[in-house]
Structure formats: structure tokens, C-alpha cells
Image 1 (cartoon, rainbow over the protein chains, first blue to last red):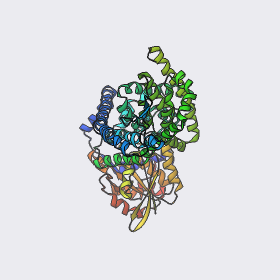
Image 2: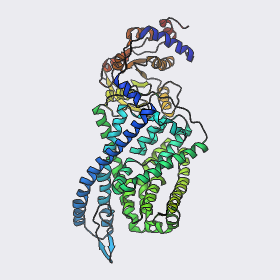
Image 3: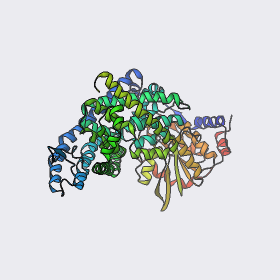
Image 4: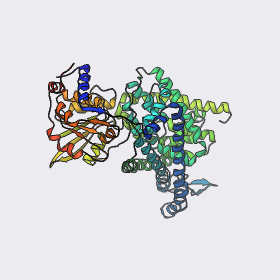
Amino acid sequence: MKLTIDQRWDLIDKIAKQTVTFGEYRHTLKDAIGELTIKPFTGIPIAIAVMYAFWSIFGSFAGFFTDGFFVRLFDAYWLPWLQEVFPGQGGWLYAIMVDAGGIEGGEFVLSDNCLESFGVLTSGLFVAIGVVLPAIVIFYLMLALLEDIGYMPRLAVLIDTMLHKIGLHGYAIVPTILSLGCNVPGVTATRILETKKQRFIMMTLLAIFIPCGAQIGIMQDVIPGLMGWILLYLIIGYFIFGYILNKIVPGKAPEFLIDVPPYRRPMLSNIGKKVWGRIAGFFKVAIPFVLLGAAIVGVLYQLGVIRFLGDALAPVFVGWFGVPKETAGPLIAAFLRKDLAVAQLSVIEMTEYQMITAVVLVSIYFPCVATFAMMLKEGWKELLGAMAVLTVVVFAYGGLIHLIGILLGVA
Amino acid sequence: MKVLLIGHPNVGKSVFFNRLTGANVTESNYPGTTVDFTKGYMNIGGEDAELIDVPGTFSLDPKDKAEEVAVAMLHENKDVRVICVIDASKIERGVYLALEILEEGYPMVIALNMWDAAVDKNIRIDINNLQRILGVPVVPTVAISGEGIKELISRLKEAKPVEIDDIIKNAGGLT
């Protein structure tokens, strides 16, 4: 037998009256903190402080391990040792695996650091382990803390009004923040949004504008001074194109109701398990892709494909986006791993503004293959739609950034 | 035996799942952590049982894609026993979902989870009376510390379909 909704609530009323008694409830310190962090007047400054703390801990932890330890290890020991022992210096296998080197005064010279060498075992390993690993360890540690304490729903409430402007609601902060670690779980997390319209907007914006932890980690290391501008361009793009998508995508963007859970003390074992699970995933999935990406780009360089592509697309790169044509190589690598692409960009000679533009392009031009696969799993129609939006965004926004540079007199 | 964990978002279903199967699905303190189903195996009295963790849902009328997954898993597995996980501090709406599932004839046990938090809030629940009215086992639990989980599992065999008419009768009739 099925009850109507009214009958069901009527029955529940009867049951509750006979079984539940509510005693006096005293406000606790936890409740007080809970309220302070959710009321806009106090909550917003606290949210800014939390984000700032997140950012500075992230930067100093990752920097400590990368600059203080891995850079030395890789550049002073690993690279020279491999350059020494790997056979066939100057040959194609040597170039792909260890060091593509450079030509100076007509002579082949070896690279002196792991970013310039472009080898699978040098640049590839250095990017994956030396730079990205410390970054994602600290990122996931802090994310797990925020998740388990119960801060995320509060952030969602605080940012609700802003996200309504782009057809989403506060809870879209969850897929957004998860994407800052890795876009793949970010894409699956869009399932918590109610309508197709919201899921489409969210998925598209994530794939285009949210840089993953690996990418942020490498930016932090190789172009720390420019990162602020790059992130600013990405955030502005997220809102501009979200606003436009909200206007043109049909469908509803309903309000959201949320249960804000009480703050809970995080359990060390759970934090440990989560962080470890994500790092294990990084070793299993990301590292092979970084190495594969380095190998593919290395081979394409050796075959002259990248030079050919760069020349063929030079009008687009130089004329429209205002970046050097060598950007073609990193853009291919970016399909496999964005972190690798940024590392490769960082050693190409260009002006600061070109670097900003190029890194923004690498971020927005195509989701990495893992994200692509996950989007396909969520629905091919959405994926096609997102790709169409992406194409427009790359050309429109890339051109706009170039134009801004011209107007500012820096490009 | 097939067992399905169902309940509102953020009531601790994944914590139960990990404890019972030794699996490693993500647990967090926000609604919407689980967005897909996971299957695992546990042992009940020497017998292998399949346990399924699904996203949280407020009712059987899904409001988003994650809830759709939960409802679909319930409807695809007609032969499951249901562990309905209810936040002990918010018992009314938990019972709403439980009633919906009972109306469809699924055998059920109820876990009143986060029992410790309810005690802290001075909420008292008459377990025996609740069991009498609903006609299904009701077990207070604290999933993160493991309290009550053994009893919950041992009482899975008592789960049986109940007639809504009986519940109405036990509760003293509708208005």
C-alpha cells in the first residue's frame, strides 16, 4: 500500500510523538563557531582568511620540498648522472629519454637543468615527483581537513549569491574546489546539481577554467611571479562565460536547500586514508601520463612534427594569440598532462605577457585526456556541447587577452 | 544475501560501508560526497553478502543525478535487504524515507546513526516503541566508532517486509 505525502507526514507525526522527546538544548561553542562562519558579516572575512591560509600553506610547503630538496636532487645529481651514463649522446633516443640539449655556436650542448632537458627520465620525472607530488600532497591534506571538519557547506552558503549569477548555486563550490585538486572527481561531483543546465554549465566551466592541483603546483614553481595574473584571467573567464552560458543554455537554475552539518573533529585515520588514496591514484595514473606525454612530445620534436605544426599554425599563434609558435609543442603535451605543458612552456623564450597568455591557453584549450574520458562517461551530448563552447572560448578569450595586452602596451 | 545502504546525504552510509567491507570509499563531512554506487563484500555468520553503498537521497523521488543513482539501485535490486541509515537527531525525515521504502515492500533494518550527537542534544528516542510501531529492527549506532554495528548486522536476518496498515494501526491510526 502507498501513502500520499500528507498521510505519510501525518503518520510520522504520530510515530514521533510517541517515541521522541526533545530535552533542553544548550548552545555550545561549536554552534557559536558554526554560526560565525556562516553569517555573511563574519563568515566572509573568515572565508577569505581560510582561503588565504590554504594558499600560503600550499605555496610554502610545496616550495620547501621542491626548491629546497628536489631541484637540487634532480639538477645537481640525477641529470648529470644520467647525461653521463645514458648511451648515445646526441642521438634520438638520448634526446627523448634524457636530454634534447641545444645547439650553441653550431655545437651540441647539454642542458643544465631538468626543465630544459625535455627528457622523459629527466623533465618527466622531475615534474611528476619533484614538483607536482609535494603540491598535491599538501593540497589533498588541507582539502581533507576542510571536508572532514565540515567547512565546505558553509563556503557554499556564503558564495551562493555570486554563483547564482552564472546559473549555478552555492553548492557548485564543491565540484569547483574538488577540481582544483583534479578535474576528474570534479566532473563526477557535478551530479549533485539538480538540473541538466546546471550540470552542463558546471562541467564546461570546470573543464575550461579550473586549473588542477598539478598545474597549480608547477606554476607555483616555474612562474611564481606570473601566477596571480594567470589565475585572475581564469577566474574572470569563469564568471564571464558562466554568465553568458546562463543566458543562452535553456533550462532551470533552481535554488538549493542544504543541510549544513555541524563541525566535527576530523579523524586522523580518515584524513590519512583519503590523502593516501589520492596520492596512490597519482602514482598509478598521473605519473605514467606525464612520462608518456614527455615521450610523445619528444618523439614529435624529433620527427619535426612540432616544428611543422608551429609553422603551419604560426598565424594563429603569433597573429591571433600573440604567443610564440613554439607553444605548439606544449599544447600537444597539455592534452595528456597540463603540468608537463606548463613546464615545457616555462623554458620557451618569450615575454612575461606572452607567458601569461600561453599558460592561460594551455589551461583553457582542452581538458586533459582523463577529464575528457570522465566527461564522456557523464554524457556525450554534454561533452560535445562543452567542446563547442570551449572552441569559442579559446579563440574569443585568447584573442581578448592578446587585445588587452596590446592596449596595455605589453604585448 | 544482498544488502543496500540507503539514507539521507551525510548520515554516514559510506562510513558503514567502509567498516563492513574494509573498502576505501571517500568519507567526508558534507552532503554529496558519494555520487556513485560502490559494491563490496562482507561476511554475515559465515555467509558472503554483497553490500552496496549509494549516494544519499532525501526521498524516492530523485532531485539530482546522484539521487537518481540511489533510487535506481534500489529499484534494480528487488531482492535486497535495506539498511536505512537515519540521523538520530533528525528522525522524522529519516522515517519519511524509511516509510517510502517499506511501502514498496523491501525488508529493512534501521540504523539510528550519530546516536552520540543525539544524546548530546538531549534528544531521547524510545527505541523499543519505535521498533514496535514500525515492525522492523531499530539499532542505535555510532558508525565512526563502530558502536552498534555488530548488532545491526546480526539483526539483518530479522528484516522482513511490513504492511503499512500495521504501522498505521500500531501508531494509533491516521487523523
